[in-house]
Amino acid sequence: MPFSQVTETGAARYSESVIQFKRFSMRRQIQWIGFSLIIGVLAGSAAAIFLNSLEWASRFRDSHRQIIWALPLAGLAIVWAFQRFGQSVNPGINLIIDEIHDPKNVVPLKMAPLILAGTLLTHLFGGSAGREGTAVQMSASLADQLSRFFSIETVERKILLVAGAGAGFGAAIGTPWAGVVFGMEVIHIGRLKPFAWIECFIASFTAYYTAVFLGAHHSVFSLGGFEVAEFSRAGGSTVFVTLFYVALAGALFGLTAACFIRLTHLIERLLGQAVKPALLRPFVGGLLLVFLFWLEGSYRFIGLGISEIQRVLSSDSQAVTSFSVPLLKSAFTALTVGSGFKGGEFIPLVFIGTTLGGALSLVLPLTPQFLGALGFAAVFAGAANVPITCTIMACELFGFTLLPYALVACFFSYYFSGHPGIYRSQKYSQKKLGFLRVAFSWLGELPKRFF
Image (cartoon, rainbow, N blue to C red):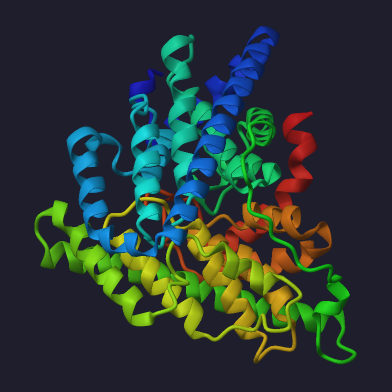
């Protein structure tokens, strides 16, 4: 049956069968190992350039605080540049996900320099945005350029994009195992289909070690030497009691993610209605941001806020935070992203989750470091619908003794956040409760699938 005549579901299965058939060839396997290594080098190099440039921009801003008053002009410049030179790549990660679902056109190479410049300007002038989304876009767009130079079928471009996205994610955070899974998990809600796990593995680890070799400065997150057994402050509590409180916290993390998503979409809609010229929306949003930064006074919510995350995760006895901290960070980030600034939401969501975890220690019998580490991973898990990725990430950063707790927190957050996520191009495969069954049965199917 011709490819053009099959249904959408049939087309997807046909595409994946073509990929699997080609990979039976030993020569083709060797070629894809080479492609994966190239993807990793490109992603790691891009991550190193980006992380080092971002560190410089953050240091310059912190030593010249008055520069944030030019944030509205920076927003104007960012949107003008994308309208003038990059209208086709403005959807960002959603464009990457769309191309993975239905490969049509090679992602333009200009996505990489444009998103890099836009993110650096956002942070240089104090916007409350993230960085990992930028790394994902840069890496995926660079990886997709291989299809211009090598004989790669249209349907095989899915592998390039998935491996590139995962490699960029892992290299930017410093968590290569999470990067292996991210690209495959983020494209669907309710399904993890590991059709490119070998390529993702090679690309992610190559990207991570390339970034380290090139001197990338990964943020260090430490739990201050605590053991998991010390994280419970409920005298004589069992593991099951602790898991109950972790599940409760996970549900709250998921609801927080849902509120953030809806607030961001609300700001986008309100600004779209109130300010018709798209070019002026980040200018208006920038004006509101600098006024609110000045009104708040501490300027702790500009940029990434890494120091605040590290403070909660440390053994500092003053690590407990007020509930107003994650609330304000949510508002500042939603206004930054919703008005058109670049950079993504990962680190702001980590900030929100970590500080919310610290605040929850006021009402739950768990330490702020423990809840902060769980919130670090769980809020993004709910917002991006990637619970497996975030569970692995938490274990890489904080130790594998955290595994059962991170797993519970991330999946409860994933469920309670609802279906809409920060990536609008994600497709629904099944209801989230069904994904719980599939996710846990997937590990048992690995030998049958691949060996």
